[in-house]
Amino acid sequence: MAALTVGLLACGSKDPQNALEEAARQLEENIKNQQTSAVMQQLHTDFLAQQHYGRQEIRQQMLGLFMRYKSINILVLNRDCQLDKGFYDRGLCTAQVGITGAQRLIPERAEHYRVSSVWQLTDKKWQLLQLDWQ
Image 1 (cartoon, rainbow, N blue to C red):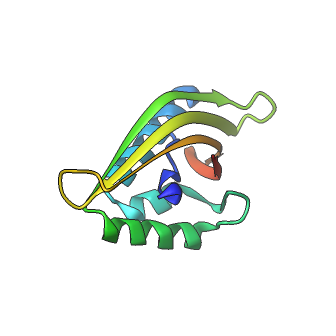
Image 2: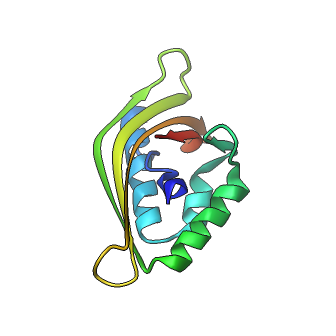
């Protein structure tokens, strides 16, 4: 379930700050809607989670969770996205994230994480470069 948090942060509009926040919201929606290919498009080619999970490992974990749980709900609290002051093409986001997974109406699993991420602006789109959670 932890890998599912992969991305609760990303981009989209004219202002880089707003685009970063919109990307984060879009990633959250893609995970909720179990849109694996859309999530993968938001991951940078050099994506790394927890300092050792690459794109393929995260994709496999997502697919496994999407098969196990019919519905996935995400509650993001205190999301804070900022442009990196040292790099014009980097963004940093943090959030408190609650995730539940259920086959029917009642969640079978609930987790809470503190998530931090680094985003890279590539071809005018924010992509998730690094993700860590506790």
